[in-house]
Length: 87
Image 1 (tube, helix red, strand yellow):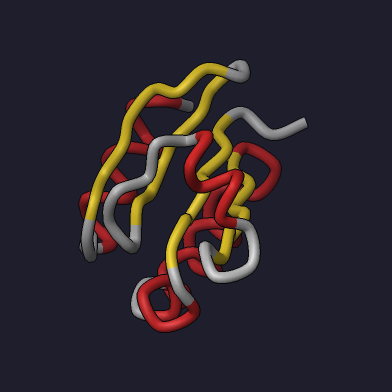
Image 2 (cartoon, one colour):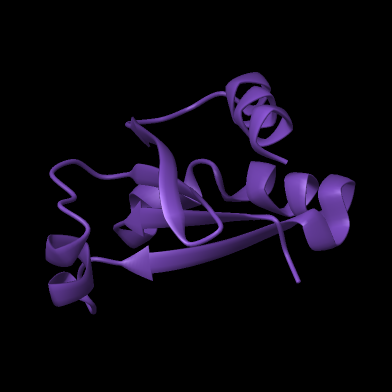
């Protein structure tokens, strides 16, 4: 079971901008991190439920509770720091 869930919410284009970082982070952290992508064009109700107001929005969950949220493009170093602090 993973420790940290990262929900990347946005459009195809906005999520694609950091997608390569997601694969690298999942490889680095293995079972400790799970990344899911939510496309607001196809799942707007979920985006609204999560109160997403900008694309992309990265929402970090631990034990089912939101722990951190970043809007806009985020650098790999910042993503790594957040995951390190949550795991």
